[in-house]
Structure formats: C-alpha cells, structure tokens
Image (cartoon, rainbow, N blue to C red; front, side, top):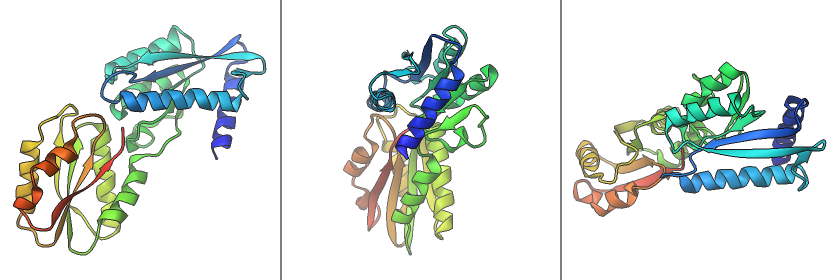
Amino acid sequence: MKRMLLGGMVSALAMTSAAFADITIAHVYGKTGPLEAYAKQSHDGLMLGLEYATDGTMEINGEKIVVIEKNTQLKPENGKALLEEAYGDDEVDLAIGPVSSGVALAMLPVAEEYEKILIVEPAVADSITGANWNRYIFRTGRNSSQDAVSNAIALAGEGVHIATLAQDYAFGRDGIAAFKDALESVGSSVAHEEYVPTDTTDFTAAAERIFNAMKDLDGEKKLFIIWAGGGNPLGKINAMDPSRSASRSRPAATSSPR
C-alpha cells in the first residue's frame, strides 16, 4: 500500500511539472511549537518517502525534486498566507501539510483558489475531507472517525459511563463528535463533555466539573481524553485522585494528534 501511494504521488508530480526544470514541493507545517515532535516526524517521513520512491536519486525523469519548508507556528492565518506564498510566489507544484487540523482548515480554500494539490498529513479532523473538502485536497493519514471506532469499541460496555476532555479546536471538537457517533453505534453514549484551550496546563476546573457530573452515576466511569502537545492532562487529572468523588472511576485513554 505504501509503495502504491508513493508511486501515485511520483506519477502526479511528473505530470504536474513537465514544463519546469525542478519539481518543487512546499512542506507547510508547524515546525516549531507544542506539536514540534509530530512535525519532525512528518518532515522526516516525507523526505524518506521521496528518497525511497526515487531510489535515492531525488529525481523524476531527470528533474530534481526540491522541498521547501514553511513554518506555520501552528497559526491558521500563517498557514493560509504561507500556502498562498508557496502557490503564488514560489510556484510550487504541490504542497504538503500541516500538523494542526485548525491550520489545515484555513489552508483548504487556498488550494481550491489556486487549483493546486494540497496533500494533508497528519492533521486528522473529519471536516478536512468532509464538510470543508474540495477537489484539490488529498489525505494520506487517518481521520478522527477512524480513531473513534477503535476507541469506542475498547471503552464502551454495559454500565460504563464515559466523560470526555478535549482541546477546543477542530482536532478536539471533530474527534469528540466522531467518538460520540462511534459510541452510539455500539449502544453507548458520552455522559459529560469538557473543552479547554489548547495551551491549558491547569485542569483543575475542568476535572472538578467532570467529577461532579459523574459522581452520582452507578457503574464503571471512564475519562476519554483527546490531546496533542504539552500539558499532560491525563497525568494531572489522575494526580487529583478521581476515585475520591466516585467509586470505580479511572482515566481511560488519550488520542494522538492533531
């Protein structure tokens, strides 16, 4: 499957850049900030994939592949402006990125305006290739709904009550919406939802609201967390001893970015 995806990408590059000496790709991603570790993995993977697909030559039909990097700093307005710059001023053949779902949503209309391909990886919000999709957008990673199905199967059960905590932007909101749909398909539901800013480090207020909402419910109680970057919500909430306000309660799971 990976070989097929890489082969398709190389074929697309060859067709879109026939009139140019170089094949230019813009990697527009959050190189610095809370998601820096994911960004590095994304860029390293891109470069390794291109090297693999071209047998180490970094060329297609004698044309050199050039990758330029643009750092969004995880700001949607930066992502939009940098993609406009890449398509317009740099005249790239295609763009790849970003790390953040919020940034990705700001970039989608730019691809449609310039009629150039944007490959979205690793941002996961369903709306990227759902409600906000256009014909120039391609996703190469998983989405929130795919995450949600496996999480719902793992966590749901008879007499289980689930609360959620997520970051208040597209990644968190789409992720919880998908999780709720997945839970419904297995006969369960979310008992309480909390959303907090992406840079939250003090989870006391949100945790107390969760504890209070769950304390009078009978049965097993779980907390499902969707989070990317720093803050350590799972560790900090666990340190507050959830069991003090309700028996048989425990933090349950976290979802990876973005």
